[in-house]
Length: 345
Image 1 (cartoon, rainbow, N blue to C red):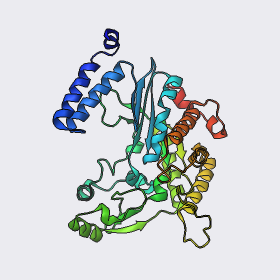
Image 2: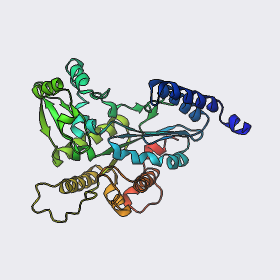
Image 3: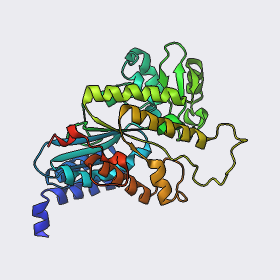
Image 4: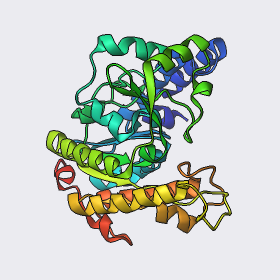
């Protein structure tokens, strides 16, 4: 026990403090988050990894910093599982995190952050709709990032940027009637009715008077948006860009005939996947073929098309690690290596 305390100085005391904080203030209090961040910082500086569903950090050895920045919804959490493999491969200090949520990562919403509306126009919107801080800020295009709710271990460069088409496939946005900027008030992945998101009648009336529904984005517009997004990321950050496609079938659905259906979701997803493949060939970036990976592992236990099982997540993270590290894999795309990223060592 004495050896363990020496190897991890200060951690046992911090854990006792964390337990006391939870007993007094309850779970997930602001003070608990601060104590947890302190514990994580101690772990990090002691040479132990920080592992959570949405972040990974580890000072694996001497060398420079290597950062992986994923912006999108829940489907991107799968890439964080590649952290230990990448840390071993690159050495030095590695930081990985997923940022943003589905309501703020549709391609047209991302693009408008390059020319955001003035704060005096968005302040009331942000407060009334409870938008996340930084909703209108160009976070994707900034050169560095810090891990959420952590301190003392950042910042990290954006050596690899990971994006997904999933928000474009599923989300509906609204346009301000006067000033033209876009918002997505939130809600569950599969287009929850706006009334269940805005449960205050006064806010609903205000929203209806100021915004109109812009609807789902078309495939061609999405590809044009990502063409510019990827070009901007490359020119501003010099980052290696990776994209994820989406599962094209509906878990739990048994329908096999779609001729009578009006634009079914699986057809829409297939169109997005095919168009993304064409864009990748033209702009020369790799795709993590989520559609193939999750089908190979079976979809019977999936809740919906973007929330994966543990086995599926592990397979996606292995594919991502192989792609970024350039080690052997079963897909030609995975042989692309981020030369700039590897050269930071």
